Image 1 (cartoon, helix red, strand yellow):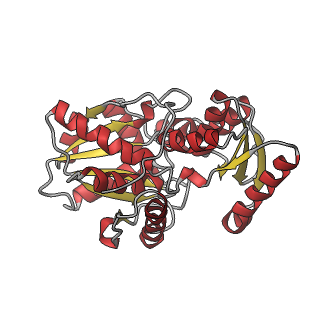
Image 2: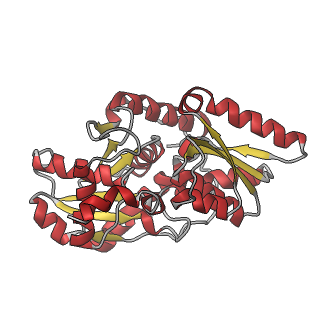
Length: 334
């Protein structure tokens, strides 16, 4: 397959380990569950976003940018990773955040401010309908000041950012050889579509035979199918003209968004608590907690009968967990 491979910076601690969840797997009574520890890509740069940002910030550096502008929720992992990457590279960062400015700095937002980010708060309606225009307007303002801004989309989920997880697939395939295991499927949370698109891209490039399955934590499967096709379309137009995009490449398990983005129910929080106590593994309530809860339910329903090994992608989010500890309090006091 002829293609132009984009360059990347080295910002993450890679490769991240793959660990078996022996007790958890026995509890579930299904396939053996393994975890790809992308929560260990760094300390402050932990999580899946930095893999995408390795490619995106290289492009920003090539354009001699000195300001990174991006968007997300107040507790956005992507926003936090972008701010810290900017600081590491000697750039400024400006965030467009959905919601009201918190009275107390906690979790990711605390780190945003600690690392010096400028923050603009907008309403959910503005975020849904106008966030790109708002970021573009901020960019124009920086240009008038003689600076060179670079706008990064939500989650760094675009054709360039997708290469972060295409690169991860090659990493996983090498680890399969070292571990002597073959993964029948890899499971990831889906919140902006970029990680899922990257895993599918890597599967196509590398000829990986594992199934790539997403569990959406907001919106619905139809929305993310369209979004992944859009991202892969960008990949094809910019880097990989021979890439064939088929809707059947995209597998998304719907039905586990709970009460909506960033809103957790007791059953999802209980899954996080049980896993912490059984395997000393911390998940976050926005992404990985919901995805693992969905995986647990689907195993019980027999969806993965016949599979031997499933790889769960831990995409990080632990700083966000520190911002919502009050949601766990009643469960932990029982």
